[in-house]
Image 1 (cartoon, rainbow over the protein chains, first blue to last red):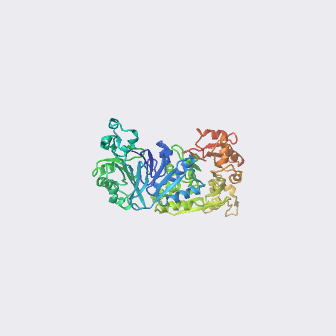
Image 2 (cartoon, chains in turn orange, brown):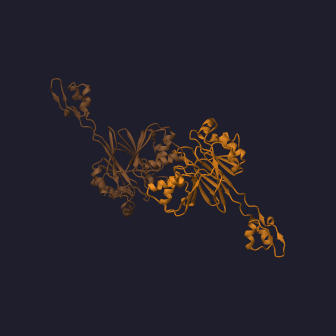
Image 3 (cartoon, chains in turn yellow, green):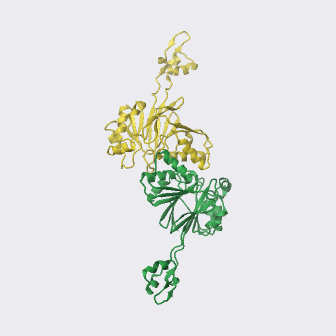
Length: 301
Length: 301
């Protein structure tokens, strides 16, 4: 599981900071999460193949999470994309994009599917045999969702030595990988425990931006491997966090602690601060395992 | 009169090229012409004060001329702008912008005025005591206007030596600047020609992008000081120019020649070419006085 940060600063794009966008590489998927202005240029800069992006998740319709989407969709069109593109985001996103395409007399040569979200409870919005994606309802000034990406129950790993010792034919391998016991021709039952090893644990990534401090999300992100949680402000600006419905570094660390997550990845920094190191310092007074996102940084988990 | 090129490449923003946007500084105005994605970052990069931009002219609603507008308007809002902002562009632009502001639960604290254009003939869209702006109807795949910026008739320059010699009081200076003769107390008439010098000639700047080769614009741009005319393609891609309703370097040079303009400023280059120098070389086989726009370049006229 790999996360590439394309942008992780709040409010407005600047010469050296980019608004929110990140690419989550998980089980051969490249999921694009949020798409602030300039995201397509960031994708080019970091040499991420446009054709590998088939699913885009938009947390909410504030510009710093969304204004780059129409440009990316248009560029896909100009580059003669053929793959389907799925966009998941708040109700209204379809009209906003289609109206702009219509105004420019354009239509996409590829299929563009919108999955508009309105639910206030967590729901599954994408699922295949390897990954499941659920929403994490957040509390912000407008309707906002975080997203929980979970690798799905994996098949158990064959113990080749044991399988060969019992002369088990390959046609039974799928059954074994899915946890089945095997009855040999002489009637002996060989337990699955003898024939397999445990699979690698499934990894989980939770993206939570933008949101006020909100303990309601804790059951949804309990024990995740990585929690990306916005930290727009430091403690000294807690009043602003409350007013603008954002989170401080300490508040995000408190959520990480209470949800017993393995790692906290901070981001969505206000550009008022000279250094982002303070976010880590303040957060670590509460929760030790903190990583700082920064534009262009890549994290392997 | 000064033109700062923020971006002058066609189609999609890239790491080293930007879509169309330029700032025309004329008679103390800073007019922003077109606003492709990333324009606000280009403005910051070139240290152009946001507060000096009060008029934005949008040629047409293709993304590479327009997708940066919503971000710029939002950033003005976040920076607590107070000055009025006037946007001139094709009908539909108001709905597109307001729908996006509404979706983000935002409203501008400053007055935002849209001047929607529908006319197929040239019309005056802005005028004050110093400058007049007219549309130049262009032919492209969707409704498109170029813009003609003209300095207005200036006052004549006082010949201080002559004015003092005749002991003319300052209360008559305005009359003299506006071309009036003066009758002295002894009845002698002093002609304006004796009291003044000719003013600097009024400068004119014509912006024509995007358009197919179109001789109908010639009467509108006759003799301008600077014609910015799109040159998306070289001669070898003339078939593409026709198909996509763009212009080649030679075609733009032909328009410049026939309209008897003083200088031709080329831009809106397709990114398929390794060097933009070829545009100049091809154009100069027809019209000599050619300048090449490039991102970040500034021209003083």
